[in-house]
Length: 237
Ligand code: FES
Image (cartoon, rainbow, N blue to C red; front, side):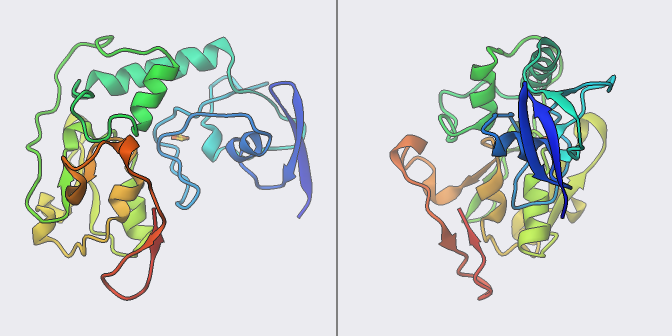
């Protein structure tokens, strides 16, 4: 496959044709924040946190779903890009519980990391907040959809890693949430509780019940493991 050469933050980067701008930047050691992207899952382009500025383009495209082309000139941290990312984080925090101190994912939360990195606090957009009941109806997974940022990684992990399609987006607009069909609890769905969804969740929306109250995230180590349920032997973190 032919290569393409583009300029990212003033550096010439050569990658195979078809590489996304995000992957090209990462190959060059240039960090771009992501929330909905996962290299093990299909590209989604939903959170928009990975926006970049590309010469001759009027909008700020999401780098995770934009293909690098020959001669492209990209800026990953221009004032417009940083401003856009701050606004995106402010919008996400506008409808997010402010309970980081007691959240199980405190210290291991991508939303928290990026809010800190960009100096963003909650309160920029006051308004209604979700009040979904916390779903604790099974022995394995606690779901707090008030902390869900609708990145869809759990939906894609269930469909693409496990070929299960148990959960998906349901309802519309402000009421949108991720749930099994008919918004049934997980215990009444065909979920095998493999934990793939939990392993990709970037916030505290999905938590492994066995870990709750046992240790803070920085006191435990993530390891690659094998799902014991169906015998296929899927690996995940
Ligand atoms: Fe690119 Fe979410 S990481 S849009």
